[in-house]
Length: 190
Image (cartoon, rainbow, N blue to C red; front, side, top):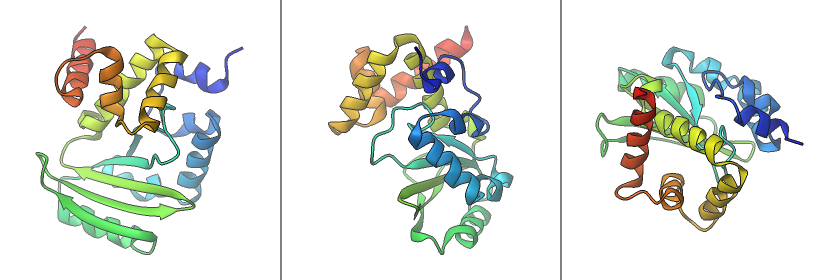
C-alpha cells in the first residue's frame, strides 16, 4: 500500500502553495506547521515566494534547510524588508551573492530547529534555477521510483549535493547543475 507521500509524489505537485506539505511525511508536516504558524510566506507575499529544494520532493536529510525563493526587482528594498521581518530570529544573517548573474540577496535564520534560507533574485520565481531543478528532480523521482529516491538520499548522506547525486545516478556527463537544466528544458519543450 502506498503512503500518502508516495501518492502525492506520483502526481505533479502544485508547488505554488505549501498545501501539499500538510499531507506529507512527518518532516514535511513540521515544515508546513512552522511556515503557517510563523506566517513566513504571507509576510513574503509581495515577492512571490515558493518553497523549493529537497523538503518538498521528499529527498531531504537531517541537515536540510527550508529553502524559499523570491522574486525581487529591487535588492535594497528586499534586503530591508527581510531584515525588518526576520532580524530578531536566531542566527539571522543577510548578504549579497554576486557570484551569480543576476546577483541575489540571501538571508538565513533558525526557527524551531529548522534553518530557513530566503533567496531573492531579479528573476520570476518559476524561472529561477532552484525551482527548475526541483521540478525536473521531482519528475525524475516520479519516473524512477522509490529505490532511486532512496539512493539519492543515501548519496546526500554521504556528502553529495542534490544535483551531483542525481547526475551520478543518471550517468550525466558535464556539470550536474547545467545538465539537469538541460533535462528540464528538453521536457518542457515537448
